[in-house]
Image 1 (cartoon, rainbow, N blue to C red):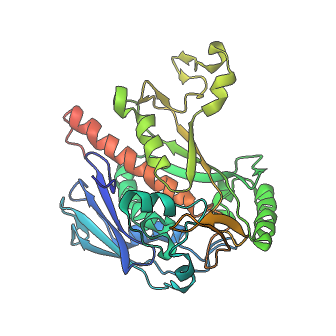
Image 2 (cartoon, one colour):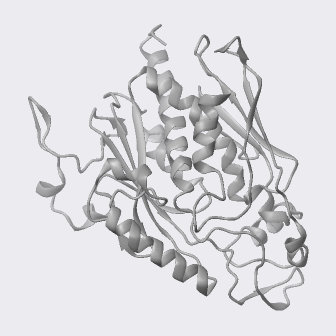
Length: 355
C-alpha cells in the first residue's frame, strides 16, 4: 500500500517532501559485512545535487547524508539501513499563491483527486527532490554490483532536439550535460540558455549502459528483467518512456534484421539490449529514457483553481530548465536497485553463499 517501496529482496522505502524537514530512505535486505561509509553514498548524491549546472535550480542544498542505522564499524550488519538528508535551503514563499491552483504538467490535480489533500510547497512528495532517497539507496546497490563486477554508466544522447553524434566515454563527466559528444554539448548549452531566457524548459533522452551483467538475471513472465527496469525508470517523475535495445525501431524491422545472431563467440549484435525472454543474455544492457520538459516554467499558462474556475498563472520560484543532467544519476540508481535485487534473487535461487 502507498507505493513508496520498491524491490523484493533488496527493498527500499523513500520518505520526505521537497519542503519538509528532511528526506531519506530505508533499505532492507542489504547483505551483511559489506564495507559502507557515508562517503560512498555522498559521491552519488553530489552528482544529483542542485545548483551545479547553468540550467539547474539555484536552490543550494548540501545534501549531506547521515547513516542512522544498519552500519557498524564501517560494515553493514544485515539490519535495515536508514539514511537521512536534511532540507536546509527551503523557501516556500513563492508557493503560497499556488496553494489553491493546479499547476499544468504537475501532479497537483491528481494528488488532490487521490488524497483530498496535498503539500503545495515545491510539489511536496511529487517533487524531484524525492529522488535523493533513490540515489542514496542506489549508491548501496552499486556497492553490491561492484562485487559482481557490474558497472552502470549513463549519458545524455539528446537535449532540446540536439542529438549526440558520437560516443566518447571520456567526455561524459567532462561537460555539465553529461553528454558523450563534446560538440553536441556546446549546442545543448546554447539551447538551455535560449530556453532559460524565454522562461521555458527542455526535454531530452538519457541512455543507460550496463556492463558485466551476467546471463541469467530476471524472472520469467511477470518479473521479466526489462519489466522491472521499465517500472523502476518509469517511476521517476520526469520519465515518459523507456526503450530497451533497439526499442521502438523494432516496429520497422524485419525478423531477419531484428534477431541477434548467436554463435560460439556469443551474440553478433545486441538489438535485444541484453535481455531475451525477460532474462539477461550476458551482453551489455542498453536502456534509454525519454525525459519530459520541466513543467515549472515562468511563461503564462492556463489552468483552474480548486473550484475549477479558470486561472492564468506564471510560476515563480527556483526551477531547473531541464531534468537533464541531474536525472542521469537517478536513472543509474534505479537500474542499480533492480540489478542488486535480481542478483540477490538469483543467488537465492541457485543456493549460492557467495555474497
